[in-house]
Structures are given as structure tokens and as C-alpha cells.
Figure 1 (cartoon, rainbow, N blue to C red):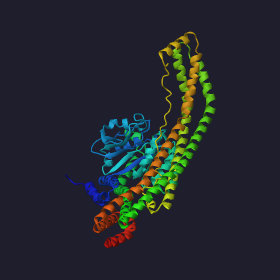
Figure 2 (tube, rainbow, N blue to C red):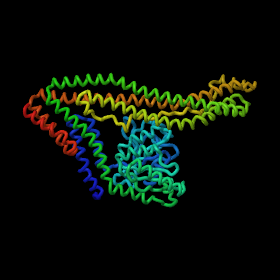
Figure 3 (cartoon, helix red, strand yellow):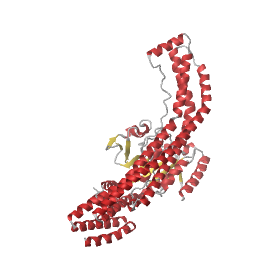
Figure 4 (cartoon, rainbow, N blue to C red):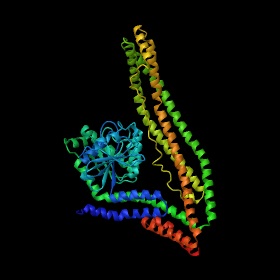
Length: 597
């Protein structure tokens, strides 16, 4: 087989990026950390394949999926009026069209490209009830031939908040981004918030104004000026050109080209000039996190070898006592969490009461007027018509209110979610200041950017089901009521049904957000406990290995210290001088102690 320049470049990249990661995985295995070993192996595979992720970001209905299809020259990604479900879809280079999905706790399953909507569309997989955790499509597009992967992310701002959460969760994996904006409306506050977060780690942003065929030149000019100003203010740097395109026209092979060739050229330039650098940066981010975990393990093991076993045992007992006290202190933190939760519930309860006070007279007036106009001939049919009317009138007033309420609910949920993380970090910081040096090295601090997001369960009460009588006896009674012209009984039940719809549906947002806050609080408390016990786990593992070495004699201790020294020296050489300097003093101490053992 002929070796191409791309193959040679990939081989060079493997040597400079993949091999250090494989060595890091070997060190993790040697130090007994299976978790670090597994995560490093995954990172090494991405590096060896030269994969980098260009995510398509933007508001719901910006035409992101259509744009990616146009770039690929193939309608491979589902498009439509309903949003994607809570799973980003990664389009990878492949010899032919294909797709696969992975479910929670399972392996990858090959599927047809035509079946992708079954797993990624909100219509066929609402709120990701099928439990999909990964979706990949494969395309022979020349644009992807050198390692670029395009990522179709769920849109921001739809009523399905899990979609926004999924896009936010994918941010750490993004290496470059295509930001899809519009002229009507222009860039939103939610998009700007996401891009501020993405901009912290991504320099390569391509801004695309899609659907240029649907707006006037004046509208696009105003939107372009506004978008440029807002992005540059929020990112603190120039964003370059905004590419005006119509992805749908491009796919259909009609209309003017506009800035299409320039956009494709910018992506090709990104691959050509920045592809390997993007892979390198992604690997560096992962490497820094994983190597820090190994430095901690080495430090713990060295200290356990240098101190008497009795001191280490006493230290671990103290750690356990401190953590037990911290567990009790978590109750105080829980009270703060609950106070936030109660405030949120009270706020939405007040808003619901205000809405019902304003809307109910209008709803009742409309229902009364339209109920009088219903034909009164056959009793069972009148019941169905009356109940359908209640559904239509209730939906007419509740749904617009719920849509605006959901936006406010999400804003408040994010505030509380961020507040939870802030309270949790304050608690851990106080513990680190008072609980001993072990807690100052606590791994994996709570991430205030990521938060502990719980996807929305917002479910609108089904307003369009057929309100049939509940039994044959009820049906016969309705027939009788129609015969004797006694429609008042049915009308009363219609009024009761209307009240039920108004009451039940006006609580949807409140119930949804409160439940999500409760689950977010639970997840955060679990995460805090995991961090606390991770400190003890590392110390106990170090003591176990030190006890074994000391039981075998001084030579074994010396060998163990030498092993740690070599591991740290290797880790320093892999991680660079800044990380390596922190262990120099410990090395000298371990060598002297080993010689005296």
C-alpha cells in the first residue's frame, strides 16, 4: 500500500503526542490507578487518529444540521422543525456512509444513516428516553479526510432544556467552532454566554449567518454589525469575517453562492494549518489533568514510605474523623440548599397565582361564549365537543405563558445550580484550610462552569386526547341527557375539566424546576462526598503499599522509593518543567531516606 503525506504526518503526530500518553497510561497502571489508565488510553486513541472536533453551535432553528449537511455534500444529518434530542452527533471521516449509537452501559451498535432520527430527534426520542449516550455518523467527505470531525449540537433555547445542557456538557471536548447566527433574530444572550465559555479554550471561531436567502441585505447588514460588536465585546478579540450563506440553497443546487466558497476555504485552511495544533491542545488539556492525579498518588506513597506505619495509620484515622465531621457539617450545607429550593418554589407559586388571577376570567368568558355556540343534539357528541373546547381554550392561554415561564425557569435554575456549586466549593475550601494538608491537594475540585445540571422533565398535560365517557353506563346517561335536553350536567363537567387543565398545566414549570433543583442538590452532595472519600482512598492505598514494602525490609522500601522517584522523573519529563519542579525536593528527601533505611 502506498504511504501518503497524510499517513506520514499522522505517524509523526503519533510519535510526538500518542507515545507520551501511552507512557502515562503505563505509569498509571504501575501506580495502581485504573481510572487514570483508562482515561489516558481513550485520549491516546484520539491523538493517534488525529481527531479534532469542530462543533456547530447556535440557537434552535438556526439551520445548523442543514449547514453541516451542505458542507458534507450529503443529507446525512436529520433536519426538521423539531429540535435534536439531548445527544450531540459526531460526524467522523469514513470510507462510506454509516452510523452507530451507544446506549448507557452498552457498546456501540451499527445503524443505518436513515435510522438516525430514531435516536437523535426530539419527535422519535423525546427527552432521550431511549438512553442514548453517543451518536456517530461516518462520511466519505473530502473535508473530513484529515481528521476533522463535525459535531451537530442540540440547539440552545428550545423548550427542551436537556438539549442546552447536552451542548454545555460537550464544551470541554470542543477544539474549534462554527457559530451559526441569524439576521432575524440576531445573536441571543444565551448564545453569547455559551460562546464566552467556549472562547476560554477555543481560538478558532468561524461565524456563519445562515438563511441569507430569507432576509434583506439591509437586515443582514444590521445583524452583521450587531453580532460583530457583541461577540468582540464578549470575547475580547476580533472575530474575523461573518460568512453569509444559505445552506438549503447550497444543498438544492440553486441560488447565488454568496460566501460559501470562502467558508469552505476557511475550514480547509483550519485543517491544513491548525489541525495538528488543535489535537495537541486537546491532548495537553487532558494530560495536565491526568498527570496531576498521578503526582498526587506519588506524593502520598512517598510520604507513607517515609513516615512510621503507626503515624500513617493515625493519620488515616484522623482523616476519617475529619471526613465524618465534614459529613455532619454537610447537613448545614443542605439547609442552605433547601433555602434556595424553597425560595424558587415560592417564586414560581406566586407567578402561577398571578397568571391564574389574570387569565381565568378571560378563559372562562371565552369558554362560556363558545360553549353556548356548540350544537346540542346527541348527548355523547356534545360531551366530546365540550371537552375538546375546554382543551382548546386552556391551551390557547396556557401554552404561550408556559413558553415564557420556561425561559425564566431555566434562568433561575441555572442561578441556583451555580449557587449550589459555589456553596459546595466554599465548604471544601474551609475544610482544606482546617483539615490538614491532605485536603489542600484534594483532586477534581467542583467545576463551577459545568455545574450539576439535570435535564428538564417539562411535560405539558396532554390537551388533545379524546374525552370519551369513562364507561358504557356514562355513555347511556349522556344519550338520555340529550334526549331530555338536560345538557347542564355535561356542561358542568366541561367546566370542571377546564379548571383541571388550567390547574394542572399551570404547575408544570414549577414542578419541573423544583424537581430538577432537588436532583441537582442530590448530585452535588454525592460529588462532595466522593471528593472527600477520594482523599482517604488515595491515602489508604499508599499505606497498603508502604506496609507491604516495610514488611519485606529496608531494601524493599529503598526499591519502592526508587520506583516512585523514577516514576516522578518520567512524569516530570512528560509533563514539562512547571509540573516537575514541584517534586524535586521530595525526590532528594526520598533518596536520603532510602539510603538511611
